[in-house]
Length: 68
Length: 556
Image (tube, each protein chain N blue to C red):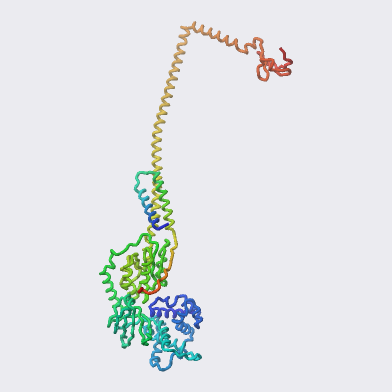
């Protein structure tokens, strides 16, 4: 999952949560749809946010001196 | 493991590192030191068999290490060392020697007390040079004495001199700035000794210290003999101002200057991107900072691109500038992190270097600086986009948005589930409410039905009453009818009798009484001769009973 996708997913999720919190009248069918979408986003985001070991790479130093 | 030797080796390493302005592991890594203390090598072969001590290290430190081993094993007698020193013709030598011994011993014992090691430093290079030269080249009696050409000899000396790195303090007595090189000379503060020095222009500029007659400076470099003149000069790679006071003054000057230029201004600061992934890292691979940084980074799958750079000593500023420039070329770095542990103004000099500060200011990557400081914040910290005081804090800054994203995700997940549960609960509630009101409505209907039923029953009852009433009315009137209409009743009775008789007349039982009988076979009334045959058992029903008979024959 790309980083931009993660940001996007988190934003979309935020929107869904906002939607839920702003609803006064209950629309179960729409709510179910939103929950389904939200759960999908959570799953994908968790996939990216789960424990992933960092990659460590030593960059080869440029040869030569600073004056170049 | 020889603990005494280990302690000695460590003290020696501390002093050597200080003298060479490098981190201690650059002198010898811990493992190598421990191996020496364990194996107690006595020869070059034994020593170089230890991992981390190759020919280069042996060349630099071998003799000192072997001496320390020998000393710790109790073999080190001053007497036994004496023959290694050239005996005569060097008047000062005999006077210096005991001083050097005592100085050496005192710094070993005091674990690098700077005063005593400085005094030992002044004497040691020359002394050691004599020793190794004597033992390697000139004292080998069984070898034929070699005759050198001048050039060969100077080459030989220069080769030896490359290991004589030094940091020299002195007063500038002459300066000659050429296009590519700056020549200057330094004078001893006490006895007017003078050494010629030169520094390449780019190194001079990076040093950021003006070489001016009368100024006291520190020149770091190694001596070299310029062959066409046979003249020794200090090939300088870095000049620094000498003393805390001058250092502080230089720091303040650069700080004010860059501040006026707006290099430290808030509006210049770039913000760290959300969820950074690719992180550039500049620090020393040997210090504690790298571990502090990486272990506190968490496990979010960061891609760390690391450039190993010294962070202290005369090489540091060059390494750092090179690393920053290299990161400028590497695309797709989300943030650059520069870390090192804390230190004094002096040890942080590289981080107060104007050229380095400008390099960082020119970067278009956000820079996080995690460099500790005692009193004055480093200028690199001031120019960086985010300054924290430890490598750990730098790591936290990098992971912060990830942690937040993670927390937010969990929170939103909880909210989502709660909302939906609440939602479902509300829906359930609503359904209950609807079904309740439906029930009520339905009950109304039922009630009406029940009412209707009751009404109906009432009506039925009334009808019954009416019928009963009617019946009574009928009974009551019977006598009247009897009396009034008795004849009519008698007529009716007669009529009934007539009907009765008529009915009786057609009753089969009555026919039997008249002498008729009914024959049945197999439960069926026999109506035709075809129904029975000879020998069939038939029943004959007559008025007062039954006769069981057998057919004897059938005929018309």
